[in-house]
Length: 304
Image 1 (spheres, rainbow, N blue to C red):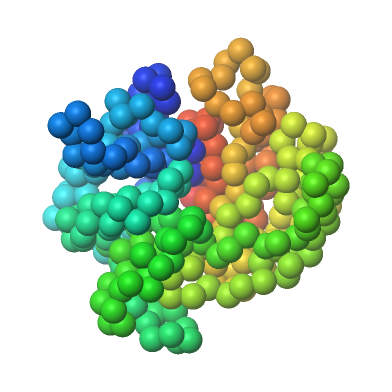
Image 2: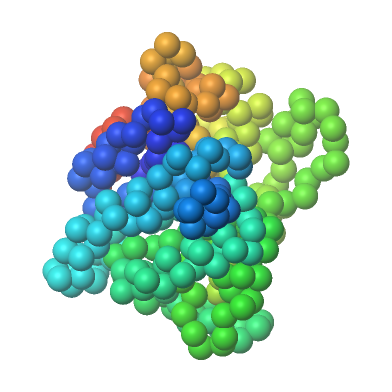
């Protein structure tokens, strides 16, 4: 269960991280969107959790919002030392801004919590991925500008990688018409969508739901056997390439019940989204992103 946008948004919805952590799942992914706030007014520069690349500076820092909150969970996990259960949690970082200073700040923050982390040694160029040394927390990032340079290339061979990125997004078309782009995405072969194998740093891949159903959530009709077959084919391809795979963001609710959720991610009903959640679970999707944490967690718990 991937807890999408699991942070306050413009001062609202501050309970999202508590909602996710109280679900009792043995594993959960927590997404934190990050933006850089330069030093000003006597406050040091810092990384804050923000849905926009233009934060006000009033937002909580990543350290305050995430690391301080999960500290008791991580320290208990280290004390219990049940390594077969690790990682217990995934932290997904979605950088809204990619300044070098921002990357260094986050790297230094991770270094301070290195005891918690699932890591791998930096391999020599061209070498296959080295095994992960499991810790209770696995940190993932995406494919933002400069991330691989700062989080992997700058690390000496043999030193630990503290977080792991996605493969690049496939360049399917230069078509400007959105309907045409949607059609191309939904028809692309799995080998085209996932052309790259995992590397020591790039260990996962990330798709909008439009890769499965043309036009995504708001244009989806009834869930079909053909849809399920396409989902299974893409997941199988990703796993064959040594990659974890995430799909985002699967919601189903009446508009009036939204709690700051993006309208474009809404299938429109609980029944519609539950069909997709179940299909994603059955297909072995590694990270199923939703804003409706409790509903998906119920299905995931039944599967286990």
